[in-house]
Image (cartoon, rainbow, N blue to C red; front, side, top):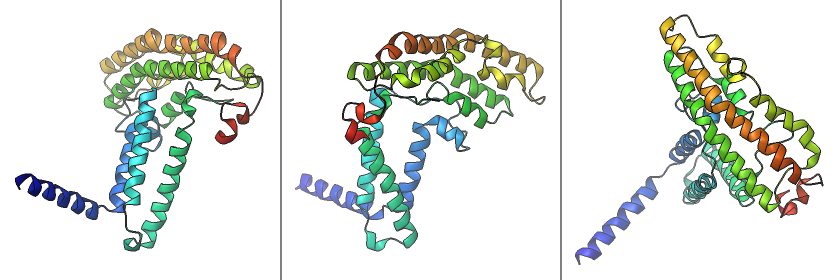
Length: 262
């Protein structure tokens, strides 16, 4: 009897929680999850909470995001449409469209091909830096942590592309001549000349000189010690491994399951 009572009580709690679910709670959870999962986009959206991080892009991370998307879709499905305001119905429809797209696209594992003809994972930090606010010591400390974490992000993308090569999910040879120099450009400069060092050339006067000197020293050590070598690994991989295995035919339909992917 005690077990039956506990089970019934648990069911009641779950039913109450489901009944208390609101579209606003789902939207807020989705937004916070999206910011946490993609620190680069968070910075671009003006949210500085994750300015010290980079996206995690290993296959297991993409699996986690797919599970999250399915969970959010289930929460939307559990809502009573008749109880929603016109605004909520519109917002639910928009989020459902985004989730449906994400879930469908995930089946093709597009993360195996993380660049286009003119940009990609290797250029994303440049846009992030442009969106980052550099006013305080804390801003620079966070950026140093982000720089130190960048090689893991680069290496994960390299491994993802290795999987793409093994499975024939690769970009065409047609774009290689244009994209390879963008990889080399990230690996070539001296640390002080690297675009990612630029924020340290304009440290505000409000930051004490001793701290400014320390920040610059740390930045040069990180960029020269781990960031540029990571970009060099990516550039070498693209030239020696990826380009020779790029596909001869242009168009998504030439990829495995290309027609469905397209």
